[in-house]
Image (tube, rainbow, N blue to C red; front, side):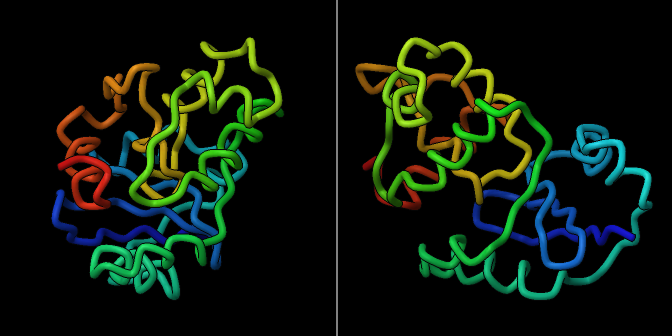
Length: 164
Protein backbone atom coordinates (compact mmCIF):
# COMPACT_ATOMS: atom_id res chain seq x y z
CA UNK A 1 0.00 0.00 0.00
CA UNK A 2 1.28 3.45 -0.93
CA UNK A 3 0.86 6.37 1.44
CA UNK A 4 -0.25 9.77 0.19
CA UNK A 5 0.04 13.01 2.07
CA UNK A 6 0.21 16.75 1.59
CA UNK A 7 2.70 19.16 3.17
CA UNK A 8 2.08 22.88 3.39
CA UNK A 9 5.15 24.74 2.10
CA UNK A 10 5.91 28.43 1.51
CA UNK A 11 5.30 27.88 -2.21
CA UNK A 12 2.10 25.83 -1.93
CA UNK A 13 0.80 22.44 -0.95
CA UNK A 14 3.25 19.67 -1.90
CA UNK A 15 1.62 16.31 -2.66
CA UNK A 16 3.59 13.19 -1.70
CA UNK A 17 3.33 9.51 -2.62
CA UNK A 18 5.59 6.98 -0.92
CA UNK A 19 6.07 3.26 -0.55
CA UNK A 20 7.47 2.45 2.87
CA UNK A 21 10.34 4.95 3.30
CA UNK A 22 10.88 5.61 -0.42
CA UNK A 23 9.41 8.68 -2.08
CA UNK A 24 7.87 7.81 -5.46
CA UNK A 25 6.30 11.15 -6.35
CA UNK A 26 6.14 14.72 -5.08
CA UNK A 27 4.76 17.81 -6.75
CA UNK A 28 2.54 20.86 -6.67
CA UNK A 29 -0.68 19.87 -8.32
CA UNK A 30 -3.52 17.39 -8.05
CA UNK A 31 -2.65 14.05 -6.47
CA UNK A 32 -4.43 12.24 -9.32
CA UNK A 33 -2.01 13.76 -11.87
CA UNK A 34 1.00 12.60 -9.85
CA UNK A 35 -0.43 9.14 -9.26
CA UNK A 36 -1.23 8.70 -12.97
CA UNK A 37 2.50 9.03 -13.72
CA UNK A 38 3.58 6.29 -11.28
CA UNK A 39 4.98 3.00 -12.48
CA UNK A 40 2.02 0.62 -12.97
CA UNK A 41 3.40 -1.88 -10.44
CA UNK A 42 3.49 0.87 -7.80
CA UNK A 43 0.08 2.28 -8.77
CA UNK A 44 -1.45 -1.18 -8.49
CA UNK A 45 -0.47 -1.36 -4.80
CA UNK A 46 -3.28 1.07 -4.03
CA UNK A 47 -3.14 4.29 -2.03
CA UNK A 48 -4.06 5.31 1.46
CA UNK A 49 -4.10 8.91 2.69
CA UNK A 50 -1.97 9.66 5.74
CA UNK A 51 -1.54 12.78 7.84
CA UNK A 52 2.23 12.41 7.45
CA UNK A 53 4.61 9.98 5.80
CA UNK A 54 7.18 8.78 8.36
CA UNK A 55 10.64 10.32 7.88
CA UNK A 56 9.80 11.92 4.50
CA UNK A 57 7.35 14.55 5.77
CA UNK A 58 9.74 15.60 8.54
CA UNK A 59 12.67 15.93 6.13
CA UNK A 60 10.62 18.04 3.71
CA UNK A 61 9.50 20.30 6.58
CA UNK A 62 13.14 20.58 7.71
CA UNK A 63 14.16 21.66 4.19
CA UNK A 64 11.51 24.39 4.14
CA UNK A 65 12.64 25.44 7.63
CA UNK A 66 16.08 26.14 6.15
CA UNK A 67 17.93 22.82 6.58
CA UNK A 68 18.76 22.49 2.88
CA UNK A 69 20.65 19.23 3.39
CA UNK A 70 17.48 17.52 4.66
CA UNK A 71 16.32 16.48 1.18
CA UNK A 72 19.49 14.41 0.78
CA UNK A 73 18.12 12.06 3.44
CA UNK A 74 15.10 11.09 1.34
CA UNK A 75 15.31 7.87 -0.65
CA UNK A 76 13.66 8.12 -4.07
CA UNK A 77 12.63 5.83 -6.90
CA UNK A 78 10.93 6.62 -10.20
CA UNK A 79 10.50 4.79 -13.50
CA UNK A 80 12.69 5.84 -16.40
CA UNK A 81 15.27 4.79 -18.93
CA UNK A 82 18.95 4.48 -18.04
CA UNK A 83 19.84 8.00 -19.24
CA UNK A 84 16.93 9.55 -17.33
CA UNK A 85 18.12 7.76 -14.19
CA UNK A 86 21.62 9.20 -14.75
CA UNK A 87 20.14 12.70 -15.21
CA UNK A 88 18.10 12.46 -12.01
CA UNK A 89 21.13 11.21 -10.09
CA UNK A 90 23.22 14.12 -11.44
CA UNK A 91 20.44 16.58 -10.50
CA UNK A 92 20.57 15.48 -6.89
CA UNK A 93 24.23 16.54 -6.83
CA UNK A 94 23.52 20.17 -7.86
CA UNK A 95 24.24 22.18 -4.71
CA UNK A 96 21.52 24.25 -3.09
CA UNK A 97 21.79 27.87 -4.19
CA UNK A 98 23.37 26.90 -7.51
CA UNK A 99 21.99 26.22 -10.96
CA UNK A 100 23.25 24.09 -13.82
CA UNK A 101 22.52 24.32 -17.55
CA UNK A 102 20.78 21.53 -19.41
CA UNK A 103 24.02 21.09 -21.42
CA UNK A 104 26.11 20.70 -18.26
CA UNK A 105 23.52 18.30 -16.85
CA UNK A 106 23.68 16.14 -20.00
CA UNK A 107 27.45 16.09 -19.69
CA UNK A 108 27.34 15.14 -15.99
CA UNK A 109 24.88 12.36 -16.85
CA UNK A 110 27.45 10.93 -19.26
CA UNK A 111 26.16 12.10 -22.64
CA UNK A 112 27.19 15.67 -23.54
CA UNK A 113 25.28 15.63 -26.85
CA UNK A 114 21.99 14.59 -25.21
CA UNK A 115 20.88 18.07 -24.12
CA UNK A 116 17.28 17.58 -25.29
CA UNK A 117 17.10 14.19 -23.58
CA UNK A 118 18.32 15.82 -20.37
CA UNK A 119 15.57 18.42 -20.72
CA UNK A 120 13.02 15.65 -21.27
CA UNK A 121 14.22 13.86 -18.14
CA UNK A 122 13.73 17.10 -16.21
CA UNK A 123 10.19 17.40 -17.58
CA UNK A 124 9.40 13.79 -16.59
CA UNK A 125 10.88 14.09 -13.10
CA UNK A 126 8.21 12.90 -10.68
CA UNK A 127 9.91 13.89 -7.43
CA UNK A 128 10.15 17.69 -7.14
CA UNK A 129 11.87 19.36 -5.29
CA UNK A 130 13.76 16.35 -3.86
CA UNK A 131 15.16 15.59 -7.31
CA UNK A 132 15.81 19.29 -7.92
CA UNK A 133 14.92 19.90 -11.56
CA UNK A 134 14.18 23.49 -10.53
CA UNK A 135 17.97 24.03 -10.37
CA UNK A 136 18.38 23.31 -14.09
CA UNK A 137 18.32 26.37 -16.37
CA UNK A 138 19.06 27.28 -19.96
CA UNK A 139 22.60 28.07 -21.07
CA UNK A 140 22.96 31.77 -20.39
CA UNK A 141 20.90 31.62 -17.21
CA UNK A 142 17.30 31.93 -18.44
CA UNK A 143 15.06 29.82 -16.24
CA UNK A 144 13.59 27.64 -18.98
CA UNK A 145 10.50 25.60 -18.15
CA UNK A 146 9.15 23.88 -15.07
CA UNK A 147 6.46 21.21 -15.09
CA UNK A 148 4.54 22.84 -12.22
CA UNK A 149 4.83 26.37 -13.63
CA UNK A 150 7.62 28.91 -13.70
CA UNK A 151 6.29 30.57 -10.52
CA UNK A 152 7.26 27.50 -8.49
CA UNK A 153 10.73 27.33 -10.06
CA UNK A 154 11.35 31.01 -9.31
CA UNK A 155 10.11 30.70 -5.73
CA UNK A 156 12.26 27.63 -5.04
CA UNK A 157 15.38 29.23 -6.53
CA UNK A 158 14.75 32.42 -4.56
CA UNK A 159 14.17 30.38 -1.37
CA UNK A 160 17.49 28.56 -1.91
CA UNK A 161 19.35 31.80 -2.61
CA UNK A 162 20.04 31.18 -6.32
CA UNK A 163 17.87 34.17 -7.34
CA UNK A 164 17.85 37.55 -5.66
